[in-house]
Length: 205
Image (spheres, rainbow, N blue to C red):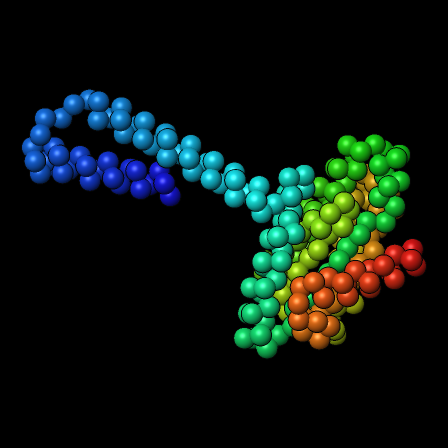
């Protein structure tokens, strides 16, 4: 974007000074143009980097807490307009401490990254995956309701298990969910409900 603006500015500058005003043309024009374009490109890359780090978890690349909450508020408004529901899913890896103890923390980090990839592959284009902290993830799912949630969760658990089965045996996740607006209208309330559901599921494993 910034590079394009600088390029357009220099094209206009060229025609104005050297075509319209008929001022002499010097080769330094190209040097200055290249310099301005380089600065614009560098500034644009820095902006993209800062934006990425402000929205994403640095380890896994999943979205962070702030971004998922912002996304939920926008998605909830759209769901209200469409008269649809919205799912908030909490996911916690079972025996993650054992993975760290047996395979090492580097492998534990690798597992988190693989889980993120599995979640990103599984969810729909309007859904969002965020790392909540540690080995916990939150997924906001568009148009999820109480009739479809149980099957969705089972398929999600299976997707994670199959994705990581070769590298990390017996990788499973405890999952809980809450439905907007039936189980709550605020993001905090829905996360609490989903977390309580997940904790009950975890006790069974």
